[in-house]
Length: 385
Image (cartoon, rainbow, N blue to C red; front, side):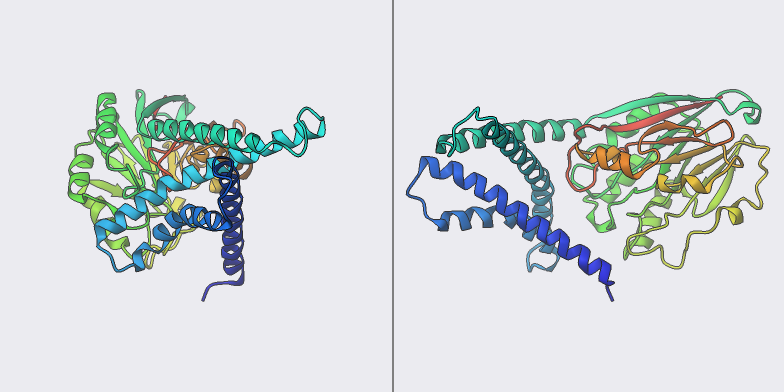
């Protein structure tokens, strides 16, 4: 049974969606009416339906009596439309605030000429198109970020080269197209180890268009000590068993609140996410003390924990924490919210000399909207000294 809080959350989300839809529809209607002044309120209703239809088709597609191909098309349309809708709302709101301020200082007359709404509408639609186009382009690029981290006396031997990935979201729009470029970028670096800090999947294994090709590509990742992963909140649910089988076939070692000793040089721990969407079957997240009880902390200890909200659980027994989850907000103004919610939502952080080093990546893929505005898809190269 859904909780009262969940029901209230859904109601609030629906009210926000309906309200913003009505607002955007009205602003578009004002512009169209300038060209065709004889238009009736029927046109307003038609515009509103056109605006909300992609959401309805996308969110109900699993229940529609159509082929899987059509359902996938509906999902793609909805993913792109969410970004368009968001920026139409933000830009129209910004334009109306500016117009209101101009009215207050009497810089423009009131009531405003109908043409004002038309020309501001045209400008906002154009700016939205430019923003969304850039976001789609930027989401298909993969940048490399490098950090040098000194672990002091614990570090054993020579420099250790670690690649951090996160949030591939396989099954999301555009996710599989990035894989070949991603693997090539990793192999050029020739890392000692590759760590994937969760959200490899996008909730549903069956959303992956070509799982066999994805497996083939991921198996070609070259690293001296292999590829390790922890599970994120989207790596769960009804297809969880298929996800685990996929990772095994990719030669990716999943650490489910477990640890591995890498070449007697370091200890790598993989944590289960605390809020899996649909659950990890019978597996539950353990206390860190339980996991650490059998570990020799004379070696450097590295923890993969998908969500950086948990960094407060770790003390000086851990040397380095690797996280993702935040996407760095993915699209502006999302980064304003992630910065407010997390102690560290992106990049390198260390509270003090007795605290672990922390690296949070913005991720390699996208969730929901296949766009990146104000953030990048990235792989992280960490040189441990």
